[in-house]
Image (cartoon, helix red, strand yellow):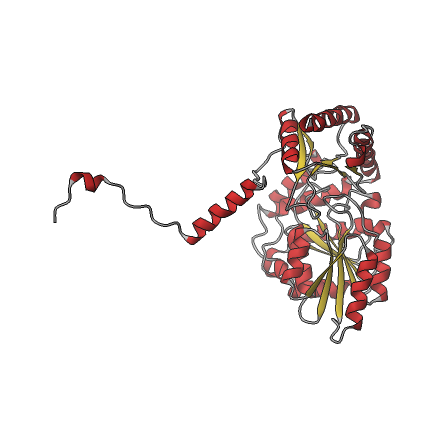
Length: 403
């Protein structure tokens, strides 16, 4: 049968979209409609009030030199899991330095803070366990709890009375979980508020529960360099900590920090059962070497400079009566300004970026309470005069965006 030239040139009917293609398109349209589209972002050439480099150590000459020295000594990568051939001398050195800095007895280094949280909770969970998560817990803690096989309950944010209710309900039920852990952050990443760790530890001890504390935003960024240490809990066996090396220490990686009489047994348990430790290539030597040197630079004087700049951020913005009630004072380096909605938060952040100022824009679903915010992070290496000028520009820009 012959086919005309015209019909031969007609385009073939479009194939129906594949299920994954349709799904991806639907999700993109939903994000766009809700104002939740995100892009990769850089802080280069900007006044940085957005990153977690609290002490300004990521570019410190001595930290960079330590990273280079580790590469020259050990190579670009660890090349294997810690339980294969991936444990290097620099990993041991880093774990010892973390113990000295935090006054904890044992440390186990992971490839990131995220994997430290996943690996710890997975290794502690399973049948017969109950994890109680604070409502504002980080995504890595939520994911770790969900993957652990434990029964998971959520307590109201920073509400130990609600935690006590959940502990008592477990104790009084017909099939109580025999292994219980309360999971909190020392300083929360969005609101910047702090947990009452001493009271939480006492409550957990009463109920023979573990307290797991994520020190991501307090290690080398708050009083005494560790919230656990400041609360007098460094030697407490039932208090376990995780941390990241990618914030105040300016490097990469994470760790579990253990104290008290069962620290060695817990570390051995993690080495043998924590999947993100067993099946992940060990932390790169450069990051480990950088973190070791950064711990030596995160001294009392540097922490004091961070504290002064954090106070300047809060006090300057709160001095404007139009913003005073919208400033959420943090316990560490982070303060937030609440915004009316996602669009105003995105607009203000974009306007500030155009003026050479980087701030973080937090909006649903990244915020646990559904409130959009600009997060402003103090750094120890900011010149106070330049910081003050920048803060006045931030206040003006927020108010202009909303006018």
